[in-house]
Image 1 (cartoon, rainbow, N blue to C red):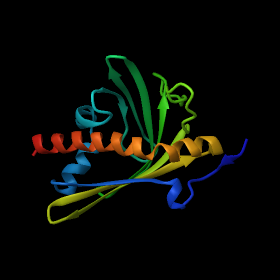
Image 2 (cartoon, helix red, strand yellow; image 1 turned 90 degrees about the vertical axis):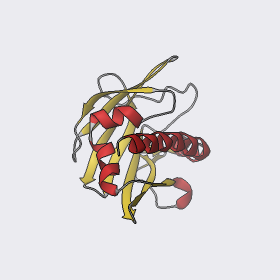
Image 3 (cartoon, rainbow, N blue to C red; image 1 turned 45 degrees about the horizontal axis):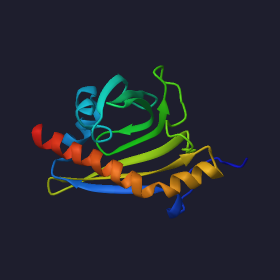
Length: 173
């Protein structure tokens, strides 16, 4: 089984999504920096987020539970870099309630265990461009193929999450 050791820069292997938010960069940054804020907007539409732990610093963890009527899913970020207010680099994984990496709860789908993401915030004219770029690390060829085939679904998922962030920012102005 071949393992891909690092994220490739090939554009077909990296997922990218951006959104221009009608808020200054510092306010957008704060939406990522506190458990109270993340609980109000992070995650898929229709899920309630329970933040179990947030250590918003390099080497820290964001461990959370996504609750829906059909059941719970756990996730975690391990922060590699937190450079206020411009850049967050993190490894995202599904997890168990203790925060250990687990397989995604999608039967028959070999989702990568770890996805390395770089999130950047750039302000211009009082608006902030939020950009996310990421790809699997330590992934098998099969996991990489599943990741690539899921770009449309990820655009929908992150699009809904960014919609929730916009609503949060408009309420917290």
